[in-house]
Image (cartoon, rainbow over the protein chains, first blue to last red):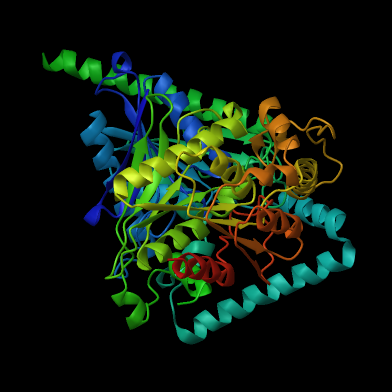
Length: 297
Length: 296
């Protein structure tokens, strides 16, 4: 395994580290892994998970790049002309270009950690080189049971009156925001703040995932057991019931893991799952690539 | 430009920067790797911008574990400000941390001491500077103090911010933070948590605590600072941090001029709440840049 830390992208403003497998495990078939910021943490990820994951994957023959999006970590500031989402997609494409140049891979898998999932989801919709996408704690859809669990949990944590007060305040703020939007006649999609906070409707989300699956992109949805918004294993399946998407996705629920994977034992389970999923994807593409080569020859 | 504004700019890049800010682009910075194969260290190397060039390189020494993740943004901004003030700056990751080679459980204070010296030598080589100065935060300050005694070229100016003085105290602080965060993050207080043995902690806020690092940290005491080699020193003391007066007294007794700067900013370093909170306190950053710039 070898690592190279580089500047790349427009004017060399992005900073990242490419992790390459040992020479005898390298090949231009298969996929490359793209790892980047979780929230505003720098590219090493929460508790250095991206570094450890990159090295595990390199031992399995998979090259990767871990890098900082514009304005985060060590990378230069974002282009003020771009929206947050546009800039993130451009940065992810620059990272894929770089990994393709150095490692020779032409297909990629993205790990979207928390809000990083939104960037990965946006990039996958635009770039056909992306063949795998993991959305970890990205979009959460509630059910009646999850709402009840949430209130029970909050009452346990904060007490009855504080929970009721907090819930009322949250609902009031939502109504006020909606009114303000109506008054200013501003579409929710126009606002970058909303892009950070809002999520697509479940129908819209399912439609985009169907589109990705139709393009043979393998999508995995993962949830931690942090307990407030996503709080039981079947929540995603129940929330997306009737949309025909569940059967087309891979799913993992890690009930003992908190959102940032603070406990070492849970970090291992998280990385084991991602490693195994990525290796399978890599093998599928390596086999497909060899079959395509055989057909051509 | 205020740091609050900068955090706002990171999150909302469409906000127009003020004209003065737009005109001041950050100085060039380059990622590098150095050291022996399989033991390479990662660093960001800033070259000075503007007309003032001090011929002076500053090495920034990270704290431990989650604290290093938490202060990454602050050290980047410190690096940029020092570079803008005419210094070469090396921000590096110790072996087994950040982007450097090595596993998280392969760390020890002895290795980190060697790494500080290596980084200083590399900064001298790359910059051609005749002077090197070091800055260390928390455990990084303690490591820098220890490394100064071993370096062939001791630092010209050594700035220590909230150094870890009592090893046992620090381990207790890590264990308390870990316990508190586990309880907080898992929501239900009744959920099982990883056991933290009071006498032998094995992990802290997402990072392993190997036997080697725990034993090394245990040995840290005020005595650790009696071997410091430097032409001058500045100590930054935050509220609630361990009292640094005894270190200042020891240094003065050794004939080292010491300035102690008391700062009002209280930062909780040992916390996992870095996911949505970069910490860039303005007051200490200004004090650090001014302290380096004031020394000829």
